[in-house]
Image (cartoon, rainbow, N blue to C red; front, side, top):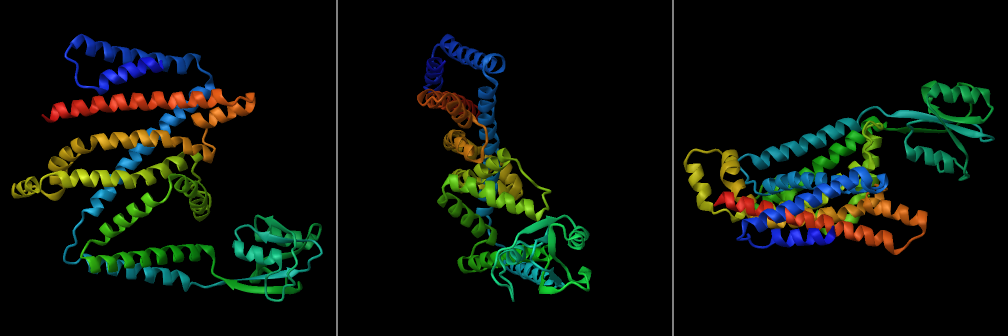
Length: 401
């Protein structure tokens, strides 16, 4: 199969053959090989191996599509030009965000008390801020002795109070002051801002300050604030290794989103990996799109505007068709790079080809065969993708002429 793909790739990647029979034979051979491989995957191959290959292809295709869309967005934002009221509007938006964050920070605080004794466990209501839970657990509060105590999580305040009254496993509870038993000794009292106010306040404050920094930078350099932000993201994303981006999106960022939405948004590992690849590669695709857009002669843009076309019509009818023809080769290279980097998703326990081969190696204690197989499979995938992209490039060039 590999030799057949190599032959077909060589015929398709080279110059257009003069003999039509030879070209037809090359396309037919490649089609037969693809159909045979698909039939093997669906009917003969081991289910784990077949599903691993499909996971790799799915992750590569969806990550590339997401990176292309985000790349176009970053490239478009980077080409924005400031107008008369642009800086004033963005400065007002940053002040509004900061004012909204102050509104959340000024909301009433809640007062909790630690009541009871420490002969047994301490009941903690689910949803209590982790900093307060750690303070109670390790005795790091005012008047605490620094000794570690055992805690027991309860779903509601009533459940915590019932456990305190029963005193079977719980001898203390950390509950709101208004609901604390009047006869229970108070060990510690603390007032804090609830998470329903703290999280929006911090989020709006960060967004407001970041937008203010972008507006100030745009004022200094005479650019649009969103253009400065887009360039900042591109430079940062290209400076971080892809593995670090996958780990950051896969664990802390997804966990923060899960906690902020009360487990309403809990993305599977496959989706987290696709988002990470799309974010990382969108910075590279943005530079490719920007180079293609800037390669379009400026006279064509002026001619299109002189005909009465609006900016979005100029972009759709004049700029993008020519820019895409220019950037097809580098876009093909990025697709092959994304397809290979899907192997990094195995660190998130995504069961792609590499993860399946690791499982096979652990089960049968083999060293070389699994990795040889996965290497050959990636070669087959990349050669097939390169052949297909070469064909698309030639068809696009033929239509443009």
